[in-house]
Image (cartoon, rainbow, N blue to C red; front, side, top):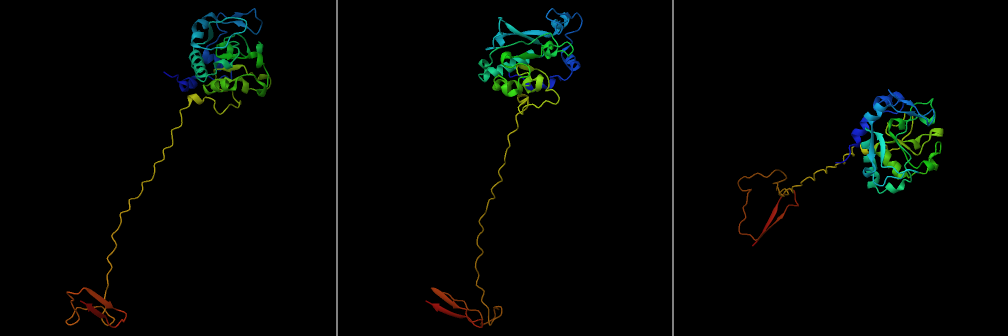
Length: 265
């Protein structure tokens, strides 16, 4: 059964504020969250939140998934609401023969704040709703024309409903990053954004106009009307002559005052 991208996109949350992300995905900094040794921008997420929301998509469901540098992985940890979308999107990448076009997988779930800055809101990675690829070629702030990521893969992700960080500008440009949220307010997206969630346009059916049936009309019979002395012919005694037994009858009616008839036998 094909994946219903349209339904998934309708349920996709806004990513404009942390409150909107928490409303959709829960709060990873909720009860039981703690400081992390990785640094002030990082935290250990709420254990209860992790149990309720984080699942692991096995690599068996992601054939051709790119390697994670420096480690061997068996799956990708994401939010339970994102897992089926990720698997379906990767299926589209594979169907297009593009799985080998991504060089590295660089993370999904990451419990930290945006830009590795504690003063900024939670990263979408902290909710398990983002994935990164080809980080070595797509650092923060790299302009779109220099981003080293396969654009056909990017297009499929965007068609399937993912927001690509490569469309952000300035220091926020993030060509490695895809997140499962609505496009951010004010960001220009590609024409094909969410295309796989839109119903195909109904074909235009042109009904040909019926060809009118022309029924040939019998020609009106030609009639020869003879007049008598320039007026209408009157059938009176002596004015009507019936000709029988003739092979041919020749009528001369050039004179408006008389009619000449010659009978040839």
